[in-house]
Length: 411
Image (cartoon, rainbow, N blue to C red):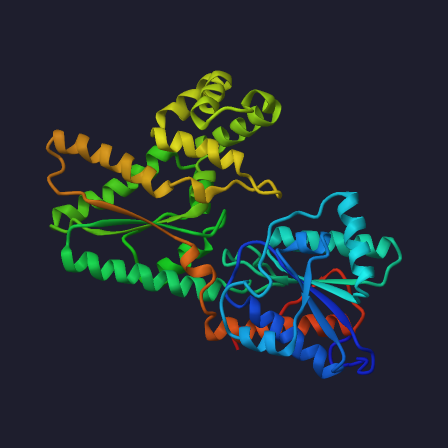
């Protein structure tokens, strides 16, 4: 359609299916509120159905009608619990065929998929499949993720980022006040955000920590694990000279994947598992670790065994728990604890040589789940409602394979 024109039909009642996909993000319920208000405005007889548990609900035809009373009770609330979410990947011909069957069975005119990059990829493929089959069932995506890794020239921000970073920043600020009050703790804070460092950087801009590692910078400068530890130790050492044996270190969740030698290690571990999956059946994590060690190249074996034992085990777990889209479960790898152990070891060496006379009492934290189902900020509340309303406008204009976008958010 053309900007400034309107060919909307107000007469036809619509049936729209909604799917919440992937991890929760503040504002999801307001997307649904926007969809509900829009379709009821254009035709009061229109209906929306929520598929339970994400894409799996579509494949299993497990749904509920989202009535006015139900939608109203969830407006401006956090979480995705109105129908719950899931990470099932729609990827096979059988999946596509089943999705089409369920859509036709329920007389759906359109499906709105609320999710991140993987979920919107699913939405695009599903839209193409329906089109190829000659079915007039539209599919619209809505950009969701606290990670902000959907940001580009067309999507200014994904919803949930504003709310989550404000929650995390408040928690970090509380830690800093506590550290300044007691003057004895170094807080190592890992922040959810998957591969991108947007969450860590935004929280750093809001709270001004002593150290913030940015994964993309680590990759660009090819910094090794040892070099990152050296940078941390340098800051801690300088602060100790002023009697400041406390501070805040922010570590992005996906940092482990950006450290060159660790990234290469994870790729090799994955290849070993995928090529020898049968050898791992029935083994516990310790047994699996031994199989990995026996098959790693000499250099990667040295890298792997140089890591603390608990990190070795968690790397194994992260590979076993890859999601249906192939993403590592980086939340399982306690990167903040890895840095604590390595910094502590380096400081002990400096203390023995007389170069460090301060105290180092580290405390580890992981902030993630605290923010992703929180009450949405005013920004996310309004933004999400607009995204949902706009998704219906796209449907009414006959479009499919599009993502709902709202621009000029700074105005």
